[in-house]
Length: 129
Image (cartoon, rainbow, N blue to C red):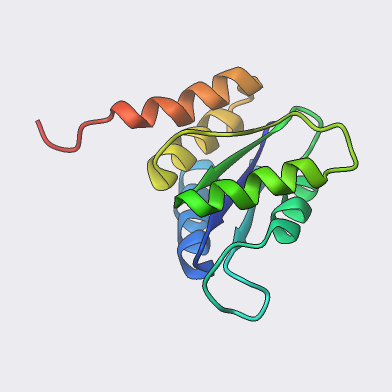
């Protein structure tokens, strides 16, 4: 199963996205939250993200969804710090919609490429017609 790491500057936001994604996938998931700082403050922590990647990895790769630009920098640092050879990619997607799409695809056994595609296709979803 493809793992998903949800990165947000706010733990509350990351937990909320996780909760919403669980409603769509049930218990068939490998999602991990890496939100906020260890002290409860706002920010992103490369070491927390690294740990989340390792925890989410079930052997089929890990997709990372992020909220803001500096979360990308922290996620890139986390990937560089990995000692293990894990297939990891940061999805270029809105964090809520992309995480939901990725979670659903991963929960039905989608491949790494299918999960990335599901996440990144969220960029094209129109909310108003």
